[in-house]
Amino acid sequence: MGRYNTTNVILDKFDKRIAGTTIISIPFDSNDIYIRTTSLERLDKLAATFYGDVAEWYKIANANGLGKGTLWIPAEKLLRIPQVPNIDEYITMHNKNR
Image (tube, rainbow, N blue to C red; front, side, top):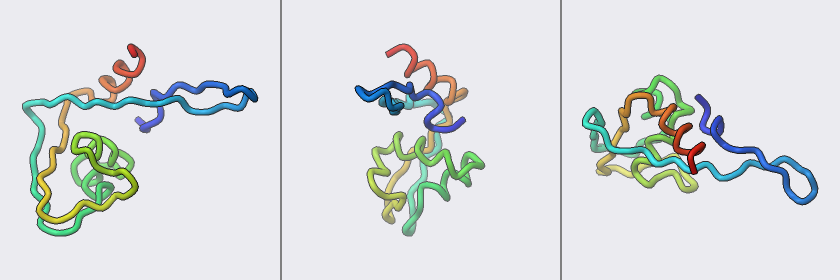
C-alpha cells in the first residue's frame, strides 16, 4: 500500500485537486522490533530490510518521530520497527474515521 492511498483528495477554491492531510498514528504492539543503529543509517534501507519495500520508510519514521526533511538516522539511535499486524488496514481505518 502506498502512503497516500488513504489520503483524501479535495478541491481548492480554483477546483484544482489537492491532497488532504493524512494522519498516521502507529500503535505499539508486542511484536514491535527494537534496534540501535551503530552507524549512520537510512530509513528507506531499514524499510527494505524489515518490510521488503523501500517505500514503507514512513512507518519507521512515524513510529520514531523521524523523517522531517531527511531519510538519515544518526548512529546510536534506538528505533522501534512497527510490526503491527495489518498496519495498512489500521492506517486506512484511522484516516477514514477522523
